Image (cartoon, rainbow, N blue to C red):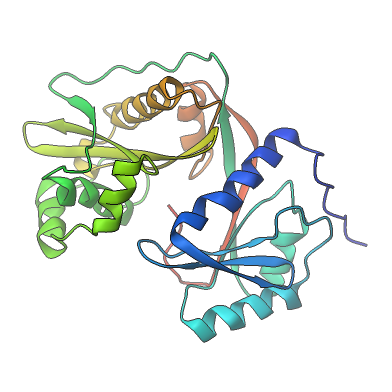
Length: 281
């Protein structure tokens, strides 16, 4: 016998995150109900995923996951799913049984009033990115280069790769600039004399925001830039009066870095995709 999913309200902090997860894609996606899932279908910038429907209080089974995958293939979107493991504990088993590769990543929330300062390396400045930013293509390229070389160790990819990526994709989608202008996406960048070397963002909805995409060029790693960017994003969110700040970490080692900035583990973010598909960031 499988354990039933906890009823709504069983984890108040996780319930806040579930409402956020349901709301945040809606500014850039259409939705379909497929069985017990909400399928978010991108209308612009980013590919989305399916999630267990908000308030679902029963187990999910593999056949239901397969039905969503069939619909995703039909409309030509990635076969991907996201969920909170502690809210829908049946999902990991169902996704694996349906043939998906599953990850369960640490989910952390920033403690109210927790210390979150981090030293900025000498010669580096950190600032909020404007919607009119002329260098936005190079700033966005930092994450592309960083996530192509996984882990936290220093590597050879750096500013030449960043600039090549920006040259290959020089046109920033106007919708992203619109999101920055509207405060739906808040981006911070760390720069030295050679330009952008680290970046990150948070995405507010009501009183909640998620920190996403914290990335450092591999040549600039192990200098505390990720912590400095994260601290700047926390400060921005607190100044804006946001009460809940959270993120998911790529693993336990990364989670420990965030814990030094006042985050505490509250659960796990579940991710599932077709085997061999690009990993989540």
